Every structure is written in C-alpha cells, then in structure tokens.
Length: 244
Image: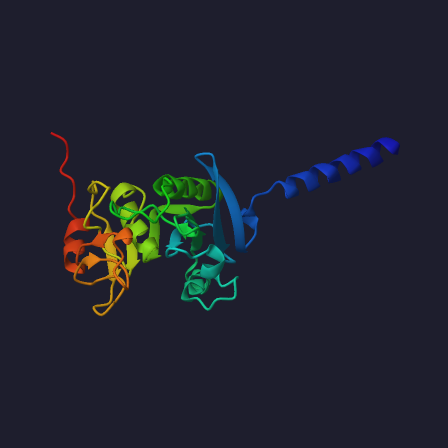
C-alpha cells in the first residue's frame, strides 16, 4: 500500500511539472514577454485569441511610432489607442497579433532603426534580426501560416515596416504603412522581390510631407528626409536584378 501511495504521488508530481512547463500555446489572452536578441533583452506583447483551432493562422506585427511603448499600443497604459482594435480583429478573424518594442533612441524612448540614413534620433539596434527572431520563436510555439506574416506600422513604425519589406521580404507577405514614406537617403538596399504595400498618408500632414522633404513640424533635419508618396510607391517595388 505504501508503494502504491508513493507511486501515485510521483505521478501527480510529474503531471504538475509538465503542466507548469507548458508554453502559452494552451492559453489565450494578452501577454507581455521578454526575449534576448544579440545579447539584449527585448520586449514584446502577444495576443492569442480564443478558439484558434488546428489550422495554421496568420501572424500580424503592429509597430509603434517613435517614443511609444507597447503598453500604449495595447491600451494597458490608459491611453486611448486605435491599435488595441487589432485584438478585436484577431478574435473575429482568428490570427495572432504581436506588438514588439524598439530600443531607446536619442530621446530616451523606444524607436526603430529604420532605413533613414540621415536620421540620427533612432537606436542602432538590428531590428530586422529582432523581428526575424520573433517570427521564428512564435512559429515554433504556435501553428503559424508562414505565407501570411504581415507588418503594419505608423510613423517610425511605418518606416520600419518598409525596412522589413526590403530586407526581410522572404518572410513578409505584405505591409501597411501609416504616415511614412521611403527615405530620400537610404541605408538599406533594394528588395529582391516585390511585396504588397498599402500606404495611408495624408496630403495635408504637417509632420510627414506628402510631397517629400524634411520630416517634422517644424522641420527637423535630425529626423531625416523622405521621398514623396508617389516616388515611394515606385521605390519600394524597385526589385534588385538577379546576379549574373
């Protein structure tokens, strides 16, 4: 009898250990996580809707603007934010949403190291590698359709989405850009294949000039210069020719 008692206690302990070590794959909701990339601890929030089922689902990245924290994006900080609506869409359409966070720039708040070669206020982090690591890590824990990985971003996040379309377009199906354009001075190359892009720029935007020029209101050369929206549409789909 003592043997049976000990045996069943061991079974219970083993069962509890397995449950405690499970990933979030069996849970749903909004989680804030850390992941080490290039020796630096990076933050991101991930939203898992209930009832994903067994089919592979899309993965959507929502990139913040300069100086914005992920808690601002998700509404956890108390700010009114349209970006938390992505979670409602995820509930109805069944996809996973990720809100990654950039590292601090010159002003001490989160920024993305986008393609602007004449912008000096952003961090110097390898954010392309960061997003690539997130894609690999999330797809290892959830059933992701790797042909449907999308990126949306506003302002600095929109510029970063463009960089991903250029430098990670083997993993990104499409991007949506709000209040951003291609840099007039770019430190990025040309895409090796075209990526579907949606631009949402205002013709009367005082901060991001629709017809190109210096960013900012008032104009701030430290933030770099951009092409016009029309020139941007041409530039982002200017595919690098294959090597001879």
